[in-house]
Image (cartoon, rainbow, N blue to C red; front, top):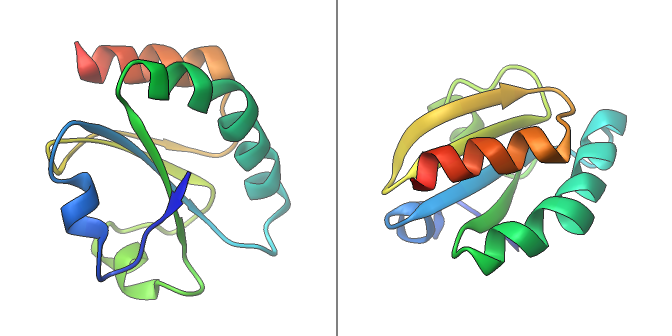
Length: 105
């Protein structure tokens, strides 16, 4: 999972489906969500050509503000740079995979 910054966010999300996890290191639910993404979602998503990326809201407050992220973890599913779906809080892997499949389809 790639860590995105203001410098590369637009380029990395411009094409295809990208799941962006807005998180912070001090956030317990974010750590739980990160483990789900890394262990369960990423292998299936990346096999289908879906990218998974992370944005640390402490390091990149401009990106959090740009997308109106007010609570974390916040998961944004982008397709060709446009937001298709937003999920807040810890999500189950099957639900995330289904949402990614819907966005890609």
